[in-house]
Length: 339
Image 1 (cartoon, one colour):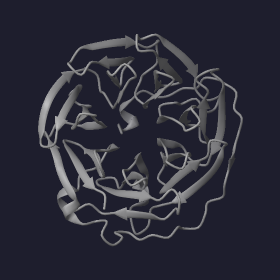
Image 2 (tube, helix red, strand yellow; image 1 turned 180 degrees about the vertical axis):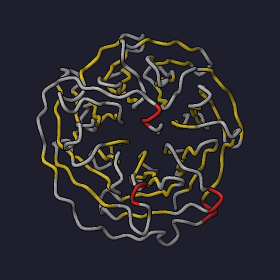
Image 3 (cartoon, one colour; image 1 turned 135 degrees about the vertical axis):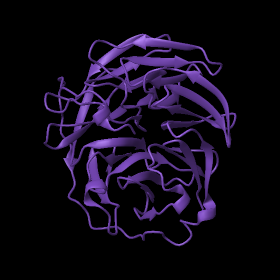
């Protein structure tokens, strides 16, 4: 994820908020740091390395093998196979996320007032967003369209580039530059900031445009739809928590950081579902990262300390082929093979 201080300040717009109920913080769940077998150094590898001024962000596995990533500093979309580049497509701006659209093309947010469509062969088309909006919070697919979070809005973009916007949040919860995901109920879920008060997660019905808000105890960052049908989200604050919200609005938090780590740098970051069905996430430590996961059924959680050769600060996480996880870390992309 890009440090939000690199971007413009977020402001508020208005829709109705229907609050949900946030549960009390539960007791620490079972699990151990470096649980037996999970931090085996042989499970780690570097699958892509680039010059030091590269800043890899979002990751996407390709159906034909290998994957795609974006270089935030270079403004480039890159196709890669393990240990080698295959194609570089100049995008411009500072791209952060990349997904496949229903049209088979790649869609990106470029960190500026544009949404980008790129063909796998390298054709690039840019669609300009309204004034004062920047697309850098996340992308998802729903109802055949690409959905993006902007500064104070959520955008819906058709394959031909037609844009519909929905005001984000409500009068006090309008900063929408957070993660976004399509839930098991077909609604589009995203997180907001709420001006120092309790934060909220909102869900948009893509058929009617109706939004429903649910109060959560901390500001969401990354979001993912879990195999249990719920939305899981990481914290944008230094509290070592993961959140889970059911599609009916029931909220639970899980304290997943254990051990002696700096209190100012203990926030979970990006999040993904692994090939084993667990919820995997990056735990930020300021100058380095841990890899964590939680079983969505038993709620047991583990933290994995990467080997010394994999000490970079990780940005994004995605499921690779089989039981691989991919993590972007500055000028490198790491792979971890799930036991």
